[in-house]
Image 1 (cartoon, rainbow, N blue to C red):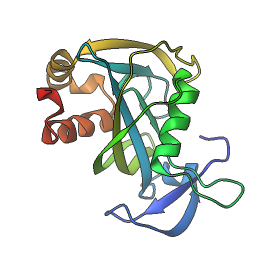
Image 2 (image 1 turned 30 degrees about the vertical axis):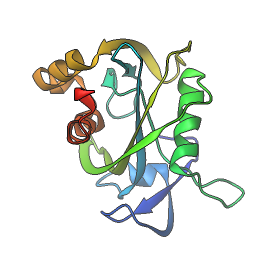
Image 3 (image 1 turned 90 degrees about the vertical axis):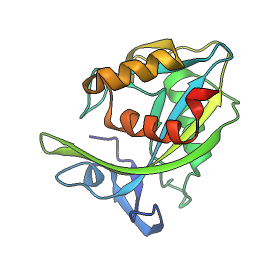
Image 4 (image 1 turned 45 degrees about the vertical axis):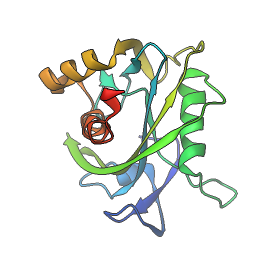
Length: 180
């Protein structure tokens, strides 16, 4: 499932209590609640960047811009939410130097064929207007879509989106993201 990555287990409030688990443990059977990140980029034209995700569990469906987990590093330190998000954007799109805003978090559980997502997921957003290149190892494709079109599409065809994208939209609505 992973390349030996170690993630941070947490409680339902997202509090890390010092327990590190292999990524596979967090994503098999019922999994273990762990910290995760979803990131959504938007541009000055009012569009959001979506990715057609390559994913072990939820493959070939639309997702927010990117998703990852804060990792426990070999040197004994843990990535911050922002460090993990910046790593994600670098790996998935070769994007550097972006200012991000943490909109909060949500819990969700989704299961498919013995694999699962059991996450306390933070949503970070940021404006980006530059060039990028999607890493073909993480995504099949991408699209910029108007915020309102995205909202209509995810509401009318939720099965076409990742479970964390669906939960992200609830938080984006609460934060009035679609009104801006």
